Amino acid sequence: MRHFVSVNQLTTEEIYAILRKAESYQKQKVMLNQQLFAANLFFEPSTRTKMSFNVAQKKLGLEILDFHSESSSVLKGESLYDTARTFEAIGSDLLVIRHPSDHWLDELDNRLSIPVINAGAGKEEHPTQCMLDLLTIYQEFGCIEGLKIAIAGDIKHSRVARSNALALQKLGATVFLTAAPGFEDDELELPYISIDEAVEICDVTMLLRIQHERHLHKAETSDYLELYGLTEEREKRMKEQAIIMHPAPINRGVEIDTDLVECRRSRIFKQMENGVYVRMAIMMHVLNEWGIINENNIEKRYSLIANR
Image (cartoon, rainbow, N blue to C red; front, side):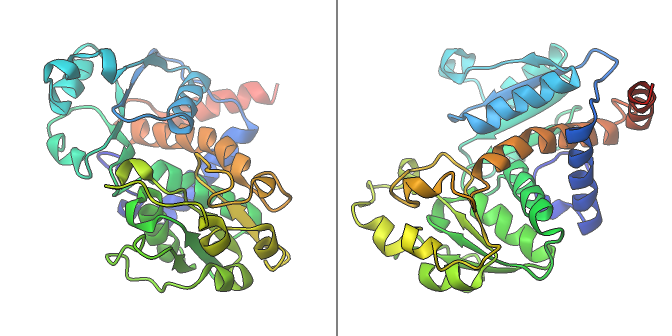
């Protein structure tokens, strides 16, 4: 695997291997015994993804080369490629990139000699979010195959919806979409159902916010919750073991009633916690694939320390 850009590039076995590795990192401290640098190039606002990568990198012992586009040479017209090459040239061993373009990797592919992790590509992909969602579902149910999962919200503008829908299908889940008129994505060949049907038949209801920043005009949300969101009344009709998920940020009182954000069914903050360990596993995976580290030696070394 040259770069980690899409969950669709992984086999089912590779996906589960990364999920198991993430689980192991929740139980055992692993730290690199060599100096390595990671650059986080975020060209869009981010709280959870960027901070999650920062914590994951610190846990692994990586040196962080931070970047702020608003105070960088991007304002002078520097391209994404030249920015990436700059960080490669000064010694970064790994690039984590979020960019508003749907296909920004095309500008970099086969032109860098260090691994790149996709931390968000326009409306197209968000593979590390997808992997932490898969881990959360797997930990909850012990499997993904056979589950019924609804992705509800602004499907048209959501990279999370696209990444999750395809990956969940690959792992054997039945995926439904639910959206307000105008929020559908016709490129995803999946059945659309109402939010009322979704809460009654699905094991997981995965909510999405309205992405106002990607709409040409601000969407009307005054009655969105009652018509298309997860209300307390709808939550009561969910299956006994069904769970609620959301990649955040959350528009409380819009796609979800604020009292449900931390209810017994909610796994929203569990998703955030899982994000740290999934991103640790992904970084270790690509560094090992590129031969930058020898992961087996590192794991063996720290296993011995843990058992003393």
